[in-house]
Image (cartoon, rainbow, N blue to C red; front, side, top):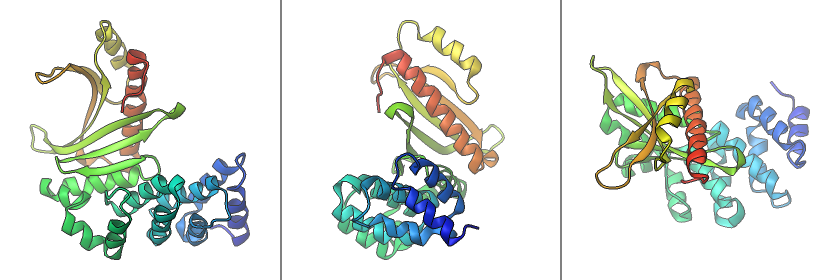
Length: 269
């Protein structure tokens, strides 16, 4: 538990770029029950530097702090510089993928569960693949709430993730839940693309596959377009927990992005 003075000191530290990251981590660890209301108040405070308000948005997003949704909506309406971060936080907290449509968010926040059911968002769509898929969409959402900058359930039947990496780079991944093992057990697949293969790519992916903790690289053939180097990991769904889901996604994102940089010298999203 954190005292009121401790929370106040950490909140004040959010205004100092030298202390902000450490203070944010400490507040996140204290949790929403201790610091949620005071941090949420920072989200809409016009007297604060933009970076302090951004840190507050990241915290309420990491906590999935539903009480901050009204404050986040106000940011979407009034602050172009923070709008994207506020939308991302709303999406993480609610599981809805609405974009920057202010009026649509207002309708959704009036009754999140009703809106989700009516528009077949995230878990509701996933239920078409069975209860296991719905549960694991929620598991990935919680595991990556403070990491992924985008997370949405796509009507084609997969969970889309965008993961930020060092140096301003990003990696997009998809997670599917519709495969089964030979024994009939549900499987979860994490998949990402690295770019078109180069002449030496087979040697490169063979070498990298030896050391990769999760996932394997392969060249995916396509009749409709160019071949692609991809990375894929399939896990029995019953093995997944918050820690393992987070670990696998981060490991694959970093490894795939490293190969993409080696092959292309670019960052293709």
